[in-house]
Image (cartoon, rainbow, N blue to C red; front, side, top):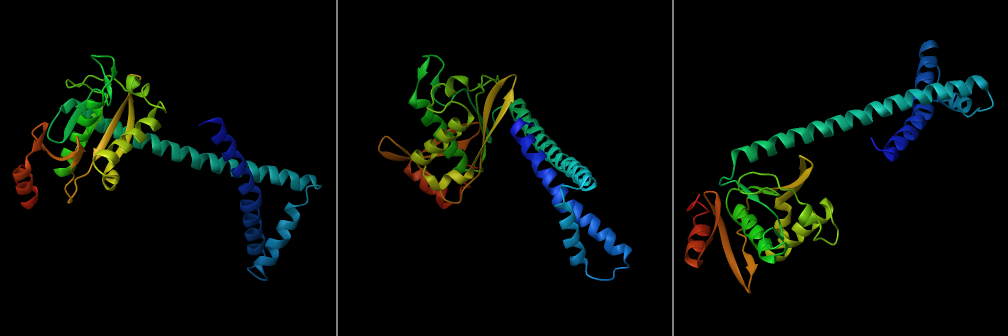
Length: 256
């Protein structure tokens, strides 16, 4: 829990304890003691007037007591939410580990980097096109998983070199760049089919693209013409025009 989140939770919890939990609890208690006679709302108004009596030592102590109760409830809720998020992240991490252990398949592909050429130690735009081809191949077939920051043998390389090439280094900048790449090369309408998440292994980030299939064929716009890609085995293959038309006409069943 960061300091800002902790402070905000404490403030909200204290206010809720004093101005919600306290009047509700006391008014219901008094109303029940009266045999459910009279107006509960009138009792609530009286209790609120008492709460505002900060000059009364007894009332100040009550406010502090219910404020602490509210803080405790708020912290319990906040902690429960964080635990749930951690459990979800752990489950996702287990899935990624299983994908890596299984290796590349028709539904899983590894890429060492997005745009940094490890051999030439410089940005290589051709690598971005390779990533876009892979995404297109998954979309045109049954969908799949693209893991960036992992070499072909499943060794975790991380994304640090790619991060350093971005105007906004880090996870947010990396995700924005991928979405921009998809929008430019494939079309912005296909961006919702791609869920981007990041996971840390051995102190290194990897990026997981969970890619859904589309009933609408996607074409890669590259070098002033359109290209059609599908997944075959553990690779991505380009189809020529007759093959692409046959594939699309048969509802993607030709090569699946």
